[in-house]
Image (cartoon, one colour):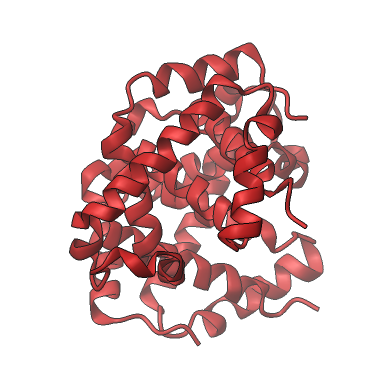
Length: 147
Length: 147
């Protein structure tokens, strides 16, 4: 089980407090689809994903991105029990959605980049390290029920 | 061989022109050592790496970071011929330095995060995509001579 120090938890929650989940969620999912285009295969029914601007402006991308990042917010409230928190979502992503767990790591990296671009210098090495540890923990938790 | 479109090249080159290689190089290597602490094993002779501030302020980290990023600048000038550009460095990292190639991907991710913190909104999804493609291709080129 991943262990977060009090400093790491503080670094994560203080930054999260300033995140606009709706906006950042849409941006995270959008960037995933732009930077790693093969991920578009999971979103066939989202309509126009033909260019970066189409993707970033797509209302279904924004809505689903918000949903995904809201769920990520649960991770932050339960940093000591990520596997328990994401058990059902893990089963869903394996059994129904058939998502390769590598994609959870990609989304985690995209989230780190977005935080870096939003917070600039405030996204210090220590803050980055805490967030990197969290996204890795979430990716592992989401992969945990795979079979 | 990786092919970069004219737009991707332009996105990379225009941002690179505004990068302070000395400053960014030190920050990239420093962040690698902070965020992925096991990478410190390659830098035993660097002295004090005991905390984030020690690492980020360490003169050997800054100097070596500058060296690494200057070499990366070669990639930007030879985006159509990365494997040849990095052939000798690939052999060096395998035969002499014994660096696991996974670390090249980690360093590539650090470059993206540092660019995102410096350029913030300007680090758009398209710019991120071009840089992700470049860092991945450099990582592959550095791995190419491994045996």
